Length: 116
Image (cartoon, rainbow, N blue to C red; front, top):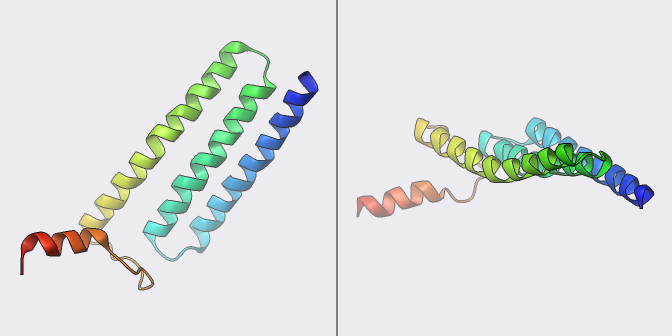
């Protein structure tokens, strides 16, 4: 049973590292703030969560595993909210999305609320 947990922990660690690498590549390669923030928040949270789950599986202390699981829950609860708030603040500050952006829903809502 211990061998299975070690192999599963190694697998989760490799997958989490791959997701984190994809997030880093997305931050470097994507064209504007909004798409970069999407890459960092989604892939970064999944990658960090998998690494913490690997820690929870590999360590054989209940206190460390509990802290790792609480860390995963914290990541999953706070990362999407913080990314949303940062994107909204950037939009309000006037940061314009890249030209390849098809739809700006916040701008569409503002136009529909202001009337004809």
